[in-house]
Length: 100
Image (cartoon, rainbow, N blue to C red; front, side, top):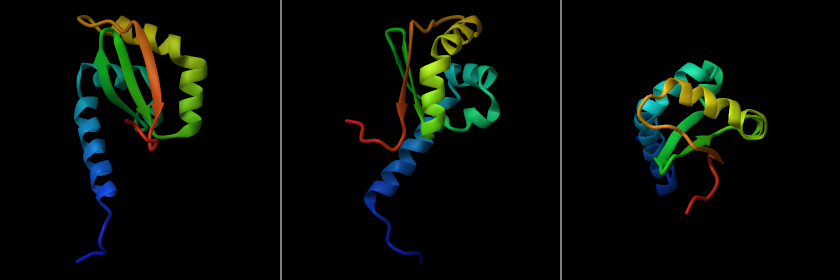
């Protein structure tokens, strides 16, 4: 039996697993095609509502790169692949920060 773990660790693990499942959605498949595999491992689909796709990035340098330099390019490349739902706005959030 291992050391006791904090409840937050369990919740974080559940959120990551859910993110991976969502990552296999149509948006996750599109991300697989537009992102380098090394970058894709750090990106999870959080939600898609009213044309807004929210991605969680677990690496601060990658977050800065994608949100600062590649946001519009990624949005356009995703829309070229997606058929039913189009991304009007692409947002990023840094993983590990407090989300309410």
